[in-house]
Amino acid sequence: MKFNYLIVGAGLAGLTFANLLAQNENNTILIIEKRQHIGGNAYDSYNANHILIHNYGPHIFHTNNQQVWKYLSQFTEWQDYQHRVLSFVDGQFIPMPITLETINQLYNTNLSQFEMADFIESQKEKVELIKSSEDVALSNAGRDIYEKFFMNYTTKQWGVSPSELDPSVISRIPFRFNRDTRYFTDRYQGIPKAGYTKMCEQMIDRPNIKVMLNTDYKEVTDAIDYDKMIYTGPVDYFYDNQFGKLKYRSVRFEMEDHDCESFQDAAVVNYPNDYDFTRITEYKKITGQQHLKTTVMKEFPCDGEEPFYPFPTKEWQECYLKYKAKADVEENVVFAGRLAEYRYYNMDVVVARAMEMVESISSLSI
Ligand code: FAD
Ligand code: UDP
Image 1 (cartoon, rainbow, N blue to C red):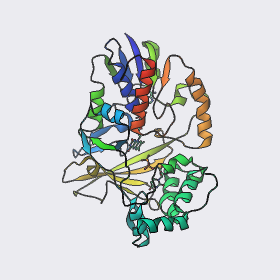
Image 2 (image 1 turned 60 degrees about the vertical axis):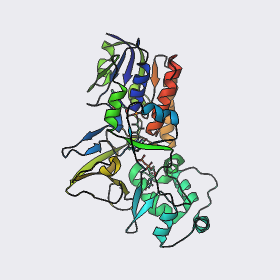
Image 3 (image 1 turned 45 degrees about the vertical axis):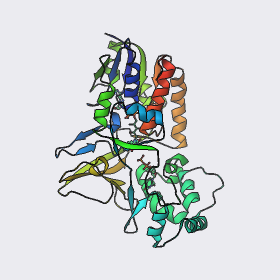
Image 4 (image 1 turned 30 degrees about the vertical axis):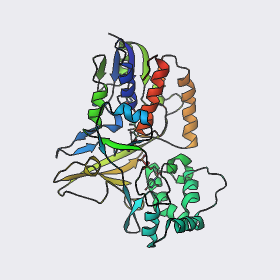
């Protein structure tokens, strides 16, 4: 059978392409996915206790992009959700990111917003040129906060010191001089009411989309006739690691079922300075599910087989650019998503980029 589009990977990048391209009924689309399910890393499922879990780590949808929000809202209703995180520091559970509440609880003070600004000013280190994630934290908040909240967490998460990581990594975490303890302040935030997997199923519920699971595309592409490929797998794999295997950070997830309704006081608790895991997520607190038992997940970052995070250092960016130079001149392949573009993208950005790219490869207007 012939297809107009062969899409490698059924994550949010691949599914957005599939959905939008399928709006033209003349297009035929085949998605090939090597895992046994669609949804990529946003996949969720019910465990043996019938608690909805995110199989690849906690996924919170948040965006300021109204177009993306409206687009995904065609496939799901949303459970309103504002993410809050606690960090276990100096024997206390303290709100993360750094806000006035964090400072007052950490130092047992009662500072006002203005006093906090003065305090942070006195703590900040002067960094002439911000070159690393360590520079970001030191110049925003000073050494004590850096060492208590960021240094060890980041070293655990990435296996290297924050001084070796691109500034963009710790810049993901805001520093605020007010009492807003939410992790994100985006205009649109929520969790798909029936879960991410159901939302993803809706995205590809069209007669002109076929899905092949449990299949590495390299096993079958010779036998499939297609016009254009949308590739959302790792870019180095596409080129048989020609310039070397790119580094990705992986995570080992450990699930625990507990015979109680509530395990911890927030959906996510970070452990920067204790244990080998970075954080514990209690899923019911994200999904809002009511249940007499609860399930939590611990994340142990590692250099495993599963490529979750592109590695944010200069060395690996430079290696990626060699692949990008080749990818940019491919006529029949479009590279999209976290693995194919080797970027630490959030879900909304992956969807937004796929929407833009579809416009550029077809005359379809979204
Ligand atoms: P993926 O979801 O990785 O999908 C790529 C798909 O391609 C995979 O299903 C893979 O199996 C398949 N594939 C790869 N190689 C092949 C092959 N050879 N043949 C066939 N198929 C192949 N984002 C947020 O916005 N909010 C969050 O809270 C959040 N939390 C996260 C937590 C963790 C632990 C992680 C790892 C990521 C998190 N993200 C979060 C990011 C989010 O997961 C990504 O932005 C999004 O899933 C990327 O979609 P994608 O389609 O680019 O990639
Ligand atoms: N980070 C940290 N301490 C924390 C939380 C995050 O040092 O308590 C750093 C860490 O380097 C992490 C980055 O900030 O990789 C981004 O955090 P985020 O919560 O966005 O990580 P993700 O959910 O993408 O794993």
